View 1: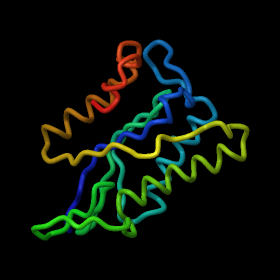
View 2 (view 1 turned 135 degrees about the horizontal axis):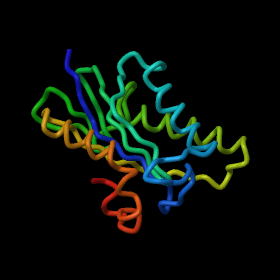
View 3 (view 1 turned 30 degrees about the vertical axis):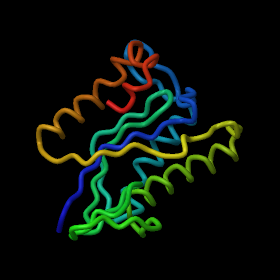
View 4 (view 1 turned 90 degrees about the vertical axis):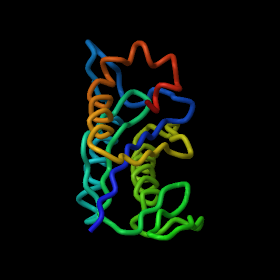
Length: 162
């Protein structure tokens, strides 16, 4: 069985801060931020092909490492098949795109029903394949240290993706 490790970033629309605040270099989740964390963690219990690694919910985004144990994996850019050409098509069941869209949808549904109707996700998400142990180490370190760097990086949206 192949394991596909992805570094994923999901932003709020216009980088609006919905999920809490950074205090003393620690993320303090508000009610909606706790729902984001809960729904992210729930992802692996809902889907047998998914495992989760490091993640952090920040005031306006979430970074996480998601592991798919499937041979055919698809991102927002198309399928990664064991073929020589890439195929662009509708999202496939159990694909990264479907998993992220369902996660975003569950948070949005909760928000709509609980006085956060102004909450909106950015329409897409960022993903990058983690190809080796060095990349995994660097991504884990970045995720872990993200709250420490918030004051500097929050004014530089290009840094949100690492």
